Length: 305
Image (cartoon, rainbow, N blue to C red; front, top):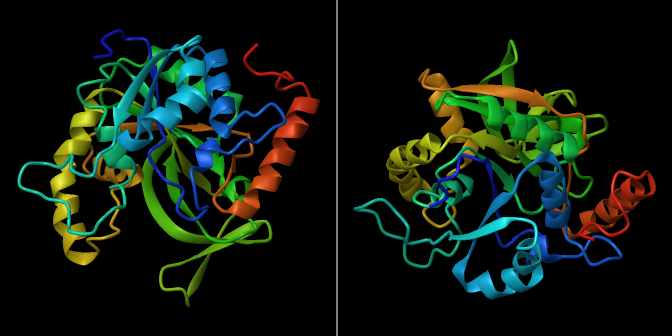
């Protein structure tokens, strides 16, 4: 149990990167052999985080410890949390043949009983930028309301790829507070803007200025119970409609809390360009972008010296 109230960085690293075809969070992105996760951890450390919890699949633990975990033990208090398919509410079972994890909300819910402090949640394979970590860390340190959360918001145009569709939580904002998040699972780049489709045939335009969630959230421990309480309702529908692939997304849980008036989410706008490897073809552009940041002095030649 992480009982200290110092904020914890929760890193969702259990996804296998199905569209990329491998452990994308373990793919080097610079000449020193660092991974995208190294840059997130480095930025988090500079922002003030000293505790990290990695959500992983149990069968990948040794590989993850060897490539990331052991190195981070010099800088962080490190915890490992397993996202297991069988971790379900009483009365529910894994459909025969299902191998896909239950999604980001389930991953974070697996922190119940381990993380008992304000925490940030990020994807292992996304580059968020230093400013986002500083803003979220500051919020977590200063907020005292267990139902007050935060989210780092990015401009949609700064999060797209040339190589296919992406899933994004499109945000509605009022007076700096999030009022709703709509998960769009197939967004395509259209110049400086974008368009999404639900059926693969009909497309709806989206502004490139739209704020989206890149799954960089700040929560209180109370939120872990919120997720677990809402999980059965998701399973009731998901297991009926798409038992092999349905996923429980963090934005959908947050959205439900907002619609019910049970929480507030402070939107923290971020100017950084998000970088990630949704497709194998994205890797080259990520490597190039990080090399430019090194040249500009944003990062030292060697991150962890």
